[in-house]
Length: 204
Image 1 (tube, rainbow, N blue to C red):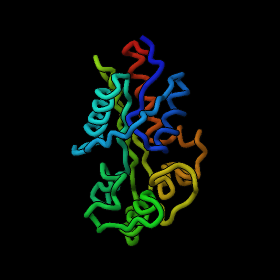
Image 2: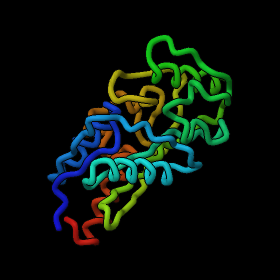
Image 3: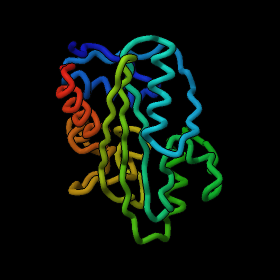
Image 4: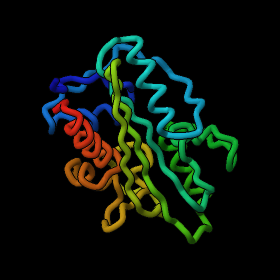
């Protein structure tokens, strides 16, 4: 069996754009669902949350489904935002942040506020992918180490990209070209790892 098309278990525009680009490199067409199922991510791990998304969208559409759960892990903040990355602005930890422009902006402002006097600025972007085929499945992980900047830089990417500088780079994630980001990013690494795994499983 050759994997030619997958349904993305997300309607997040940033993730969709990246996944379409990353999967397209392998000749896989990424389909976007026509509804957001709004899965309750009650788990304590990225992997379990990705599994919950993949399972829910599989049950709804009955198509090969690829789910991503990812986020920013900052040791100086006790591992936060972590699995709460997309909604960190509303989390009790560190106090809630008002949404003035966008949720991404509120998340960034909160992290910068909490990191204002912190010297240890290490951070890691983490991504877990789960591919649900109904009869079987695969999962993979990707990580990108770096540091939290003191102010946003760049207009590319999405999420925390403007305040994250990957290890070995002098640019923020938001200043990288799509090609540069795919090479370094947690999601790019997770996709490449997944392709290697499913190739060994006879799907590509």
